[in-house]
Length: 187
Image (cartoon, rainbow, N blue to C red; front, top):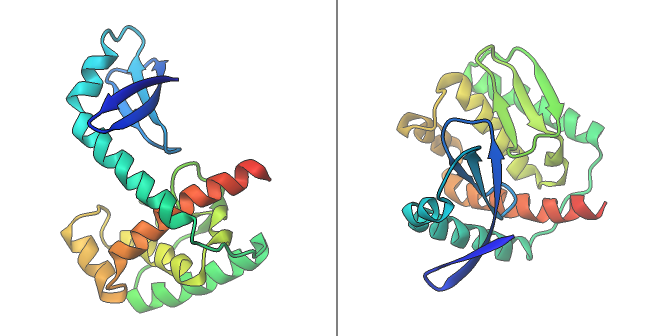
């Protein structure tokens, strides 16, 4: 792992060369990963160009990890989670007059859920560790995508009608993400 100093913070990063056209930066596990085209020349220049974004993202992740230390995880089994989620999907889809096609449960690498253009909802099996209120939020979030595909102003207006504290919920989800990554590494 290489290191770079941005302002007052030392940041570890790794480089992954892939068969892609454009470079990108990722923070999926809390570590900076530069995903670069195979013949990409100057990684330092890329870091310099995005240093403010990298710095802000690093601070956000550190805050999430601090919050995570105070959190307790649920210990429900997958069957219990599936039943709970299906119950909530049924309730919220009726409330929002949204048509859900199918519900899937799988281990997703970087998100809690997703919504396809066909009306299929996929939920991360790791939701089993979250408190009920956050599971409900994730379900509502995904059903909202049946009404509004993008995370635009209208989307967040719909979310805020049910979850006025959605920004807090988003921070909690990030905190739990890092907490669960630690637990899953151990198990």
